[in-house]
Amino acid sequence: MTSLFCRHLRLTVLAICAIVISGCSVGPDYKQPEMKLPDHYGASTTRPVGEAVRWWSTFKDPTLDSLVNRAADNNLDIRLATARIREARAQRGVVAADWWPTVDALGSYNHQRTSNSSANNFGGGTFAPKREFDAWEVGFDSTWEIDVFGGVRRSVEAANADIQASVEDRRDVIVTLLGDVARNYIELRGRQRQLAITRANLVSQQETLDLTRARFNAGLVGELDVARAQALVATTSSQVPALEALVRQSIHRLGVLLGSEPSALASELGPEGPIPIGVGAIPVGLPSELLRRRADIRRAERQLAAQTARIGVATADLFPRFTLTGSLGWQSERFKDLGSDNSLFWNIGPGFRWNIFDAGKIRSNIRVQDARQEQALVQYQQAVLTSLEDVENALVNYDREQSRRVALAAAVDSNRRAVELANQLYSRGLVDFLNVQESQRSLLAAEDQLAQSDTAVSSNLVAVYKALGGGWDAIEADQAQKDQQRQ
Image: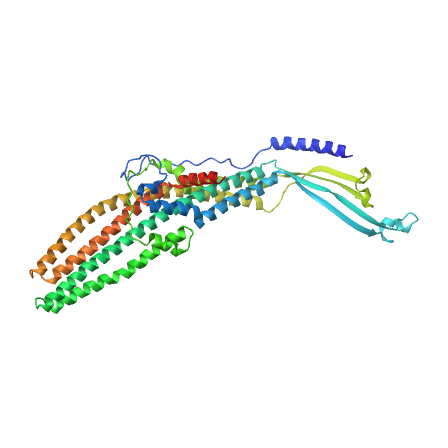
C-alpha cells in the first residue's frame, strides 16, 4: 500500500513539475528606466579626478577621522537600518516558502459510543451496531499550491528588490551620517574660533577702556568717551555666553551621532582646534555617475523594481490556482495496531480554484498596483533630478564662498590696520573715541564673518561630497575588514 502511494505521488509531482516549468509569470517584466542626463555640471569649479571614496580624509584632521570611524561603528540610525535589512531578508523567506508544499502532522484519540436511534443502527434491527469503542488516528496532511502563472515568482522578485532597497537605504543613512558628523565637527571648530575672536577683541576693548579712563582722569577726554568704551566692552561680553552655548550644543550633537550620551565628548572636543580645510581637487565626475554612486537613487530604482513585480502578483489572481492535496495516516481502535498495514489510509489528488466573480476586486487591485508603480517611477525620476540639483547647488555655494572668503580676509587685514592707527591717534589726542570705537566694532565683525566663512567653505565642501554620494563604499569596506578580523 505504501509503495502504491509513493508511486502515485511521484507521478503526480512529475506532472506538476512539468506544468510549473512550462508556466509563465504574468505581469510586466522590469526594465530600468532611462533618463537623459546632462554631459557635465553647470558649475565647473573643479576638474574630475575620480571617485569620491574616503573624502573626509582630505581634511587632514585626525580627530575628524576618529569621529567618523566611531560613528560608523556605533550610530543608532545605522543599527536601525541594518535591522531593517534583516527584516527584509526574513520577509523574503516568508514569501519564498509559498513555492513549497505545507505538511502538517496530525494525531487524535476519541472514545465513542454509538446511538441506539442513529441511522447507523438501520432502524434498530438485529444487525445494528451498539457498542462503545476507541478511535486512534495519526498521519500527515499536505497541500501544495502550484505556481503556474508566476504569482509566487513575482512575489519573490519583489522581495529580492525590497532587500536591495533596504541595503541602499542603509547606505543612504551612512552618507547622511558622514555628512552630519563632518558638518557638526566643522561648525564646532568654527564656533570655537568665533569665541576665541570675541574674547581676544574683548581683551583689546578692555585695554582701550583702561586707556580712556586714564585719559579721563587726566582731564584729556570727557566722561562720554568712558561710557562709550564701557558700552562696547559690555556688548562684546554679551556675545560670549551665546557662543559658549553653541559650542556645547555642537559637542552634544556629535556625542549623539556617535551613539553616546551628549556630554561624552566634552573633554575630547572642548579644547579649541583649527577649522578643517579640505585640500585637493573635488572628484566631481559625470552626472551619469550619480545613478551608480547616489544611494537614494539606487534605492528608488529598487523600489520601482519591487512595485513592478507586485503588478504581476496582483495579475496572477485573475487566473486559476492549482493545488495538490494529499494525506497519509493510520486509523485503529487499538493503539498497538496503528502501525499495521490494515490501519493505513491515504489519498492524493489535484484541484483548482478560480475566482470567476468578485465584483471587480482583482482588477481594481491591479489598477492600484499600476498606480503605485507609476508613483515609484515618478519618485525615481524626482530622486535623479534632486541629486543633480544638490550637486549643482553645492558646487556653486562652495565656489562662491571661496571668493567671499578672499574678500573677507582682505577686510580683516584692513580693519586690523585701522584699529592700530585709531589707537595710536587717539592716544595722542588727534582723533576722538568714536573712531576707535567704530574701528574695533568693524574689526570684530570682519573677523567673525571670516571665521563663519572659513566654516562655510569647509561645510560646503562636505555638502559637495554628500551630494556626490560618496563614502558609503569605504565604510562598508572597513566594516567587512573588521568582520574578517573578528573571524
